[in-house]
Length: 252
Image (cartoon, rainbow, N blue to C red; front, side, top):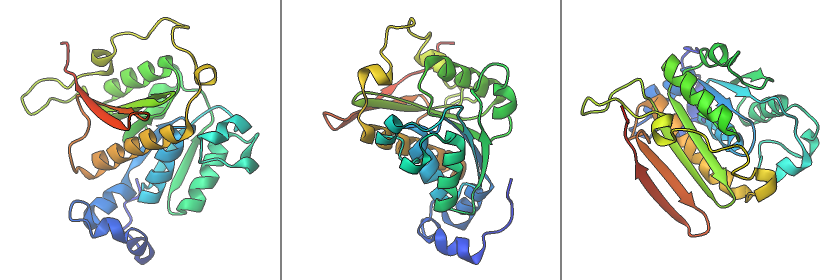
């Protein structure tokens, strides 16, 4: 945690946040003190990391075991042509430093799995999952629930995306347990049922829309403003330019 007060330069950098009554100086200090883990430095992780670093989140952890490839650049805007072949965590750290040198980046150049998930997640306050496979999504949901860490999870495919916030270890205003990821999606689809991004394709700007929504939910959770997407799945249809919201509850 970085609990040092905001410097004069930071007050100027974040002036547009600080004039917002809902955030102000105290909210910006919360952002500076926060530790956020982002799973994946790809299509979703790129806008999440860009906007959280610009917002002044003090410490960002980045988990990714891949390297930058030329085919990534159509949507993974955190990286550029010069980064092709570089570890994504290293490329991400360099990009974040250029956006905001006040942000500390912790690189986890590993594939997150049941053996290391609890140790890595336990170091952070909030997790944003931008992974591209169901095994990781379910693992993140289960581990965050067990560790009592808020999880902002999202997914994209071709021309549509979704995002929701999970805090199943807490209760809602009516005293009911908040729903879990498995209340929304009880089990993953059979292997091979859904095509991969490489097989089905994906419009690059879609990840920008959905990843930015993820970043906004993280900022809301850190600062305590607004109504997070707990028990609500926000759906975005890019071709129809339409947002819809599905409400879901705990099955317990």
